[in-house]
Image 1 (cartoon, rainbow, N blue to C red):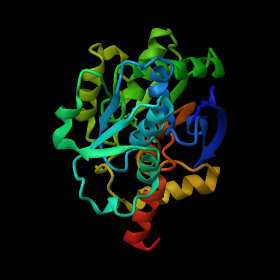
Image 2 (image 1 turned 90 degrees about the vertical axis):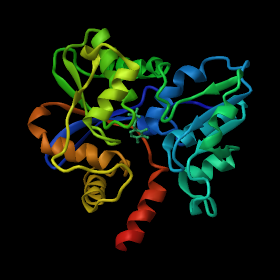
Image 3 (image 1 turned 90 degrees about the horizontal axis):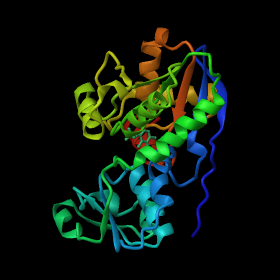
Length: 291
Ligand SMILES: *Cc1c(COP(=O)(O)O)cnc(C)c1O
C-alpha cells in the first residue's frame, strides 16, 4: 500500500448565510485521512520507523485519528494497537465508518486498562487525537501554504474548531513565528470547555502569546452528543456550499462564527476532514429523530 497526499490542498471561495469565506480543503488531502490528521502525521510519514515493532494509541471507537493511524500503520507495515475504554460495546458487532475501515486495515483493538503492557521500549506511542509535539512540522506546512495563497497586505481571520487543540495552536504558532501579523487564528473548544482547551495548549506550548483566540457559543454543548441545531446547520452548509462538512466538530464551529460574525472580516475556514466519521454520526441522528 502506498500513499500520496494531495498537497497543497485547494483554497476555494464559498458563502454561507451571506458570509463569504475561503475554504481550505484539507478534507481533500487523502480519502482515508481526516484532513488535519494527515497534517499532524506528515512528519512521521517521512521518518524511518524501522526501530519500532508496534504503534500504540488510544481513544474512542468513532475517532477520526483512529482511522488515520490504522492506515498510516498499514503503510508503514507496523502492527497497530488501539486501546479503548469500552471494548464490549455493541458497535463491535457490526462495525461501521471509521471503525469498519480501521479494522479491515489490520487495527488490533485492546482494552485501555492494559495500556502499560503495550508501552514496551520499541513501541511508538501516539497520543489521543495525534496531539504529539511532532505534529508541528506538518501543521507548519499548512501555515506556509496559506501564506502563499493569501494576500500579504490584507487581514484574515482563520477559523478551525478544536478537539485536542493541536492543529489550531500549532497553526497560530507557525504563523506568528513566520511573522505573519495579518493572519490571526480563532478557534472554539468542541471537547470540553475553554479551560480544558487552554490546558491542552499549555501541555504543548508554554508561551501563551502563540495561542489562538478562543471563542465560544452562548449555549454549552457536550462532545459527541446530538443536537438538532447541529444537524440543521450541517445540512444548511451542504445546501449552500455543496461541500460536506464534518458533523462532529464543524457544527459548533459554524455556530461560533455566526454568533461572533462581526469579528470575521475576511474569514478563512479550515475543513479538517472527518467525512468517514459522518457515516456513524448521520445514522445516530436519523435513529434519534427519524430525520
Ligand atoms: C481531529 C479533528 C478535529 C480536532 O483537531 P485537534 O487538532 O485535535 O484540535 C477537528 N475536526 C475534525 C474533522 C477532526 O477529525
